[in-house]
Length: 355
Image (cartoon, rainbow, N blue to C red; front, side):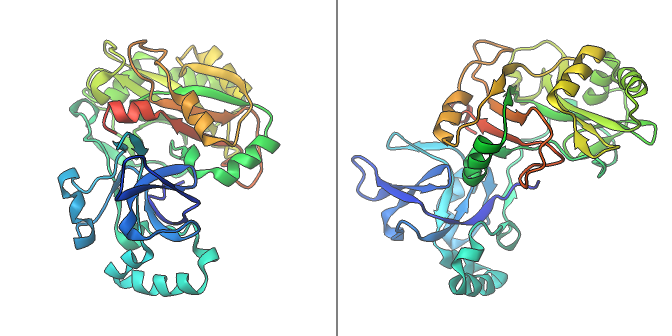
């Protein structure tokens, strides 16, 4: 699922900020962001909400963001956490297609709540520069037989969390590691090694392939497939170590910690018990487990507080957050390939590392 960086959202609450005459705090879904009182927002108004990590276009309306290179990140203003930025709907007048969308919104506001404006406005996601150790030759794009690694943030799931609370019995909670996404696949009897977006050619200096060979991942995957009546499948994890995301875990060399597995034959994710069996058989590392039987709440503040803490890999490092994964196959509308998956990112982590 592609991340919606900018959407039409309803303001569910507005609160004053102590000792602040010109700004106030607006609440959008599970997010909160500081906004100027001059904008004249009221509870229930629709607005244009830009999530953190958005890179906004250079316009007169966004000129005040130039010192930040037009990037939206987690900040504190007057001691209050602010994540994202909101503009009045008239911001759409800056774009040819936006003008027609604005007219449609005015005629039917309810239908347009949640509408994705990323393409119309031309917003891009901020991506950290790729470390030299992760560079290499490209075989092609990420194979379309397997979903890419991604999880929605809990702040965007106000409605869904109510469903999960009522319908799903038990989630596994794991630490979200701050590294680089890695996928290893058997497709058409060919072993593939992929970054988040690309299928990588094996070269001597490519770290993804070095880790695959060091851990004998191809042979282990082929053995597992042959003993479990599987032809094509993928395992996915986080590549961490020296030169990656400033090596927050103070590791020597590089390694991969698995967090998911996908059966390409059936187009479903492994259940938790199937994933644990994979780990037991292959003896590959998995991401640290925080809880293997967690009952989800629909209170995002509780989930965000749960996300805070020290990393299991390094007890002096703030963990990036946590990932919630359903233990069993679920076919409710908001599941993906039989699995419910979402994350809570630690605000302590975001503020400390200027994310």
